Length: 178
Image (tube, rainbow, N blue to C red; front, top):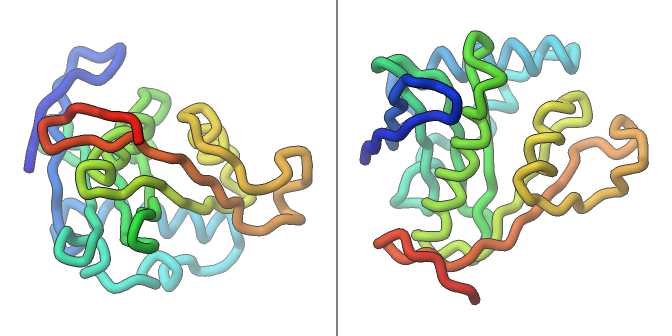
């Protein structure tokens, strides 16, 4: 699936594509993500990034991976996997370092929420690391409920869990309340 849309504040069209993890356009984002995690946490993060089988991010197994493309090049992406029968888990929300501060991560999260809702998920669950204040800010700003004490030192908590309840979205894109 692909769709084109304007990014806020930019005159460039972005295309949303659903791809398998094996798509070569995914590699640069995952490589940069692994490098950044490794730098922030002082240990190799590539094992964590490949912790889940690629199939979990395919529609057949209740997941999805999407990329935002600008002029055909990946600038951001993210995925979800089935957490349980009614919950999707967001994973690997990422914006290429050369394209940050443009609202692309918000766009990725919104697209993933919409797709999860269409697939029947009623809730999103995610965790982010204590050394990722940008991610924490993104989830708070996009309506996620922290499942931890926001006043506590993030380092004392470990992974920071969030959740968000979704409206039911039909395949035509109409949202309805539960």
